[in-house]
Image 1 (cartoon, rainbow, N blue to C red):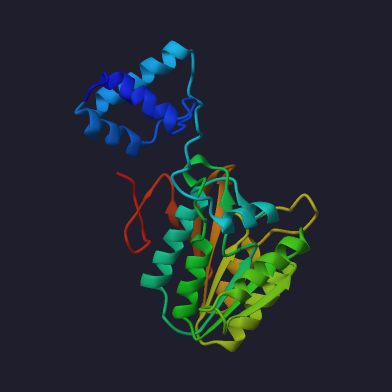
Image 2 (cartoon, helix red, strand yellow):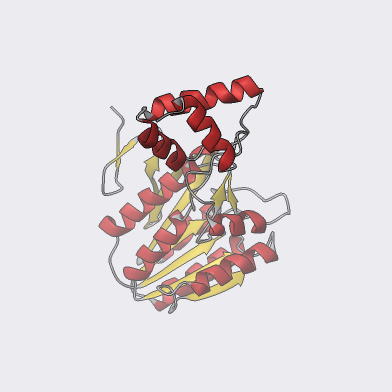
Length: 282
């Protein structure tokens, strides 16, 4: 090569119209290395030196995200279907284990409360995760029962209830399931559970109201589910009730009621075996 290799590369940059404010294409670097007999590192260093001499600075191109934003998450965010904590999902999984290993795989099942199949979350660990633990629980109840009904509470927001109900109805695997919208308070809970218990030899009920178990909602809705739950399980010996109970702002446990007795099957301060049974903490 008659010309100095550096002059050859600089001339090629000009002839091919490469924009020095942007990163030099890899194929150009490789080709110049081959044509000049220099290493790709030497070619890159030369290009940097040319930029420096001409007082040119490269523009930073934003990196593409590692994964595309899940469209379903955007739908949930737009609809206001959000989870403020990732701790409720752990309790839901404990209930799933309990249903699978401790309740009869037959009869009727009722999931009642504010449950939805999909949620988004602002929790960093769940930023790009579709929160679907309640959908998983619904699948288990559907597959371990002869009849399954979902009641979506609409006492606070009819719009959100309708969105959740439509999402439940849109699921192919849950197509045979009855999905209803109703106010879920103490009285309606008592009514729905009583009817289910009267119709089925085995009745399994899961109450999901973001941990509400006693007291009232700010809107005035009576959330005193504990008393009717104890009374109903004492009245109907075929009835099994599971519920998520809020202990603190972001602390939950799971409780099981049968034959009028109530016991904790999951707690953050205790250990639970792989069958969802509570064990004393070591």
